Image (cartoon, rainbow, N blue to C red; front, side, top):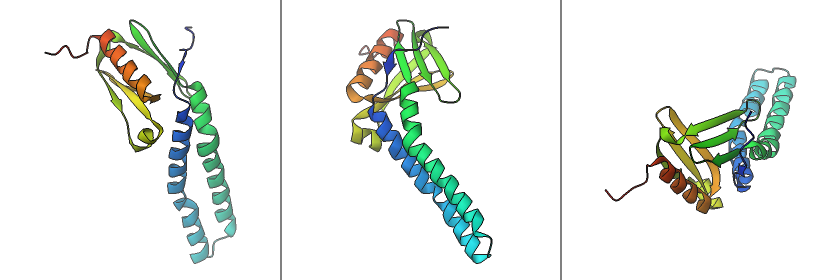
Length: 159
């Protein structure tokens, strides 16, 4: 088996993923709220409300505290002359090799949270789909995009 790629994404990814985890957890707050209303209206045992709330708190702690850090430690990439190597996953590890000959185009993408942290994502498109290298500093993302475009022969030649 080939060694893991040696390039890490920005450590700021942890903060971004914590914000996204907090937003996701906030939306899920509707579940214990609904359980509370059902417990009150239908005089169902409060045990269901407390069990649901406990699960909600555990899920929130996982999504906000632990998951972002674990994802960051595992997420890696590496650019080679003939391929791009991407390594990610927690329970299911995905080790993807994207041949340069298959790259159709490469973009950078930056949403509002990434912009706030000075990050960008590199999107690599092939006929089989799109692959993302998330949470790179803007400088690193632009440089990587340009290197991939040059190696894949997709860069603009002023035609």
